[in-house]
Image (cartoon, rainbow, N blue to C red; front, side):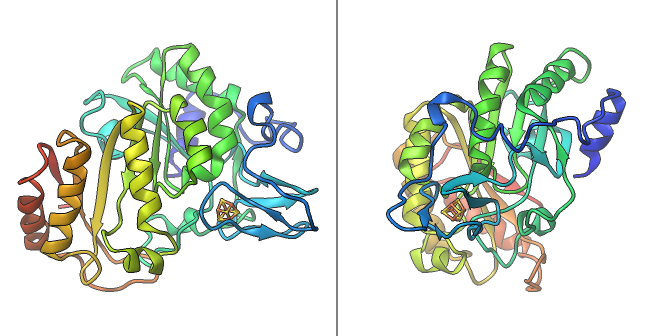
Length: 318
Ligand code: SF4
């Protein structure tokens, strides 16, 4: 994932230290200047971006490690701070039904609002603001994306991915209009854990999403630090909003590998639309989990079940 720096080098661009005003440009667009924050009845401020609803005292950082109470306002700590940047095939997101065969400039920062023990990107998702980053302003990112779109193999736009992109809410809102102005697309690869109001504000700026549906049991989601209801709502609202949505379920042995759960999940997705692509992916040991990899036979069995309800079911990591 550090390959992105190579992309910048190829273009002869210097990103380190090139954005000099990051301390004051957070949330610079007037329509979300004071978005997701709130309340100053006491010294603590509640972040309303995601259901964790962290109540933060002055200088405190939230559960996600990416947002803090700065001067009585919740601010992003990872605005324009990229840990990863690469030109990836769109299928790698995975998005199999959104401009197949294309490439997309993919960027990541740090932080996550879940705590999955099997996290596949823990080195950045579980990192805090002390991680090494490069500052890339929205204008710089949009210019790079546009430049890449004019040379082989081309570029569809920008995918905010690798760590949890919803924590870069203001950065995405500031960058998306610049990308759309040149005909480029905006993609999110996300865990879908966001409150309804900021989601409603964000969705009109998004062209495609891959949303993780990590399991179909509330208890299972709670153990990961999230909740099933919120993720289902994010998927449903994105579909209703006309965003191209694909869903990924990473199958972890003993957590979400039951036939009954997949039957329920696929049936629910089909109730939104049987055209929603579902990626059923094989887990490999990572981060704090050393359970052996998901047997391919399990992926095959669950794929077969899901295909009874959905028209596009893909095996992943097999
Ligand atoms: S986005 Fe971060 S700081 Fe805000 S509520 Fe969620 S975990 Fe807490």
